[in-house]
Length: 518
Image 1 (tube, rainbow, N blue to C red):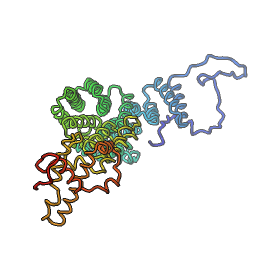
Image 2: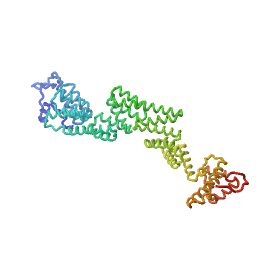
Image 3: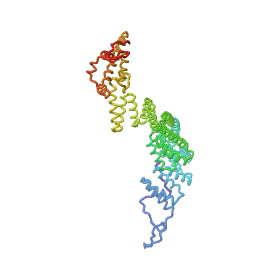
Image 4: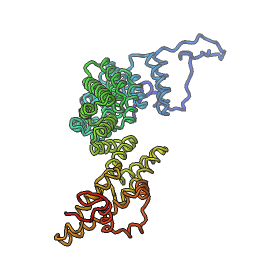
């Protein structure tokens, strides 16, 4: 804003041009002054009241003093007093407009400046203030019109050269903002809006568009602050209420979000964005509830379909999508799709790394998939998020499972389950021992013979441990088997003993001779 914002009347200019130290002669003719007769006798005469114009000028002068001292609220009151006394003075409205501008109240300043123009259509400074206010409010057309009028009134004026340049940049920025908004490049929109707001700091349209994009980007706290700030200025702003509803929607407050979109539509029945979001909000709410109902009733595959469809509704709603993905991961565990469950948990944790339930579910899936190192890592991360006895126990069990997994899996070597009976263990050993016995591979290559000998030995070790109740118990509980026992083990002796006391390859009694065919 230019420095010369105060309008000075002609009478003030004449007064200011006289010597400030000049003695002023007081006569009885001066309004409101006690008269003195020629003989020096004091004679009180009736005080003549000042007229409204004179008082208004005094108020304006006092207002100017307060304005120069940057006491803008005081100046505002004095200018208002002057206007109430002389409502047809364009200069008073012009001065109050300048004061409002210093208080960043551009709407009130614009109203006063336009009123001054209605009183005095040739009031150049009023047009200058209109241009400045319109620019601050983001009114490009209003700014351009005011700039044009000032040029017509005074072709030599350079008072609005800065505004003329700024409004051109603002028009270019608006085109760039719209292009990025249409392509959903919301980070770019926020960046360009910040530039626009430097030139148009009071533009509520820019501020609310920025808030909307921040909500799309998941920065709902920042978006909500902007929306609430605008609502304090204008409680009937449908755009502000829409943005607030958007923030509620993106933080999974669907019911409250719907109420806000409906309120915005009450204020503006043609508010297209609120119509879209109300529909999307209701659709998501219904699908979430249906999916949860199906899950609770054990209809897992149907629930899987519902959750999958719900995930397609809004890719930007990270909060809701993380919950939908977690629910689908649970469904996948119920129908045996452990790897798909892990994939869903991975996506959840990409959206929200603090999602403890997803972390624990993934750890459980890793454990069931026998990926014990990954399970331990997840439980350790979970314990950092929440130190509970249950998570400590799960971590301890996972570490134990990891330790056990690093040993030979004798059950796997024999191809049996962990609950196999003694008879099943014997049958499994008989079958595997015959498959891998070295004599069966005598004509194989040296490398193949070596591999089969190793497998034969492992089969024997497995049977030696699992057929001995004490060793099996220690093995199942995770205790280490003494290395000496393993070193002294002879798989051929085990083979001969087994078939001597358990019958030959075709079965038989205890006393059968050692005789079988491969």
